[in-house]
Image 1 (cartoon, rainbow, N blue to C red):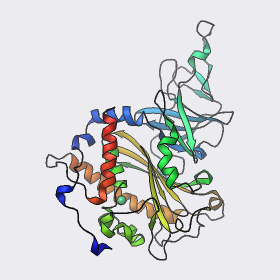
Image 2: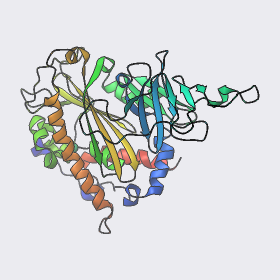
Image 3: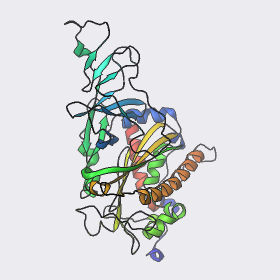
Image 4: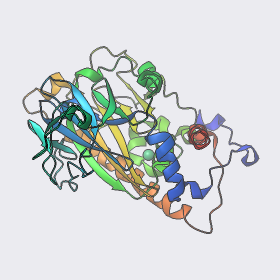
Length: 381
Ligand SMILES: [Fe+2]
């Protein structure tokens, strides 16, 4: 009960991280090496590459990676670099104007990737197909010029790539999410809509925001009307593992709290009325309602800018129904998302001020402190 809740003593509050860690290109380079290029990085969904020659262009903190379905049906990843003189093979396109699912970074290469510079071409399995006016021989065989592979695995329809030499098992990174969200049928979900945002904030600011609900009362009035527990106790003591209850009569994240769509098959009675959230560090955030998942991927491109793709996943049986319309979910999330990005951008601006020294975390922000410690440990590797 809110009335019984004891405020935390300020002297017992843990300190936030130094502002330089959110501003410095050198720190971002460290994070790129020890986090984004060392861990499994969510690159999208398998349904974005449905057929042979379908391709996703993935920017993993400064490294461009091609995710491509081959003629044999397998999905592979390669560095987006020609083995001849290093030209990028596929150039990233600017953000689409329309909210076209899949338009963000989807493309097609067809039967071969052809380098735009000297027209060296590659098969969909990454092997060199042809190099104009070059005769390969035993001393320098064609096989030496295959595209450089990047490790790729999938879980529940999500594609993950890993740029390290010896990737750790993906299961280690997924363990907590698999435990909490084990009954949600991710493999049977499909994207019904996508929103893309460019946010002027450090990726850690965004993850810190996702890690606490102390801000929910002041920032998200509509969300708190749906889930009053988000503002009770200042967002402290939320049991994310078992889910957070909606107000009576509400059971999902839409303006009415209801939906014509059926809950996912296989959920418990509690999961049908509670909201769950999980993070697969470093860049996949999952927000689970009973009939849709909002899956956020973060694409950091510098210390103070992060692209966020928000995919809305629905059960494939719902997507196939005539008149399927995701706008109730998309409109509600777009409102909540923009409220978050606004305060994250304000935080980023303030972190750069001479007037800021690290503040203290409340008891509702313990998971923010845990996240900061995890990142700090990565700096020490
Ligand atoms: Fe928020």
